[in-house]
Length: 166
Image 1 (cartoon, rainbow, N blue to C red):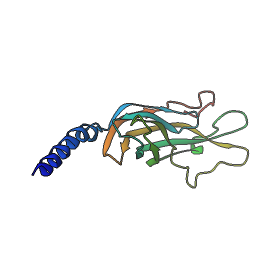
Image 2 (tube, helix red, strand yellow; image 1 turned 135 degrees about the horizontal axis):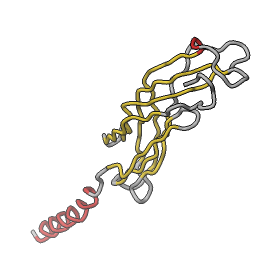
Image 3 (cartoon, rainbow, N blue to C red; image 1 turned 180 degrees about the vertical axis):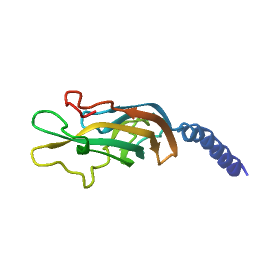
Image 4 (cartoon, rainbow, N blue to C red; image 1 turned 30 degrees about the vertical axis):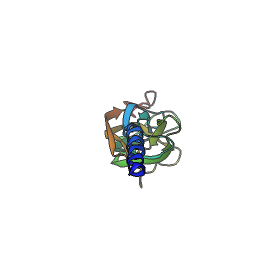
């Protein structure tokens, strides 16, 4: 009987001490911020905490993108309105990061705009991105089902010195 009571006491004590450690994990984004790079890609840098120690966490960055490509001649101009095309579609990037000893992940994910498809420039002109926008941008911790909506990012004109580009 004493052994049974001792076992129950030890078992109960172990549950009391283990429960706070198990409950300490409460995944949440501390911060997440995005910016459009000179090449038209969108980079979102983030920090997530409450993950538990040394856990591999899967993330996905997704968005709807719209990009305008233009042809630029050697004189630094977009010579004709037909030398532009706008392409739209969904984009995403994924990554897996370890939480480390402190139960946090600090990382970045980058999405690129949709490709121009079959659009190409005549000889002597180069294909460049004039503008890009990303809407419905969402960062997701797919391991713990934590979602962080980030909204819309718009580059404005990426080629302000190219006549007729924007």
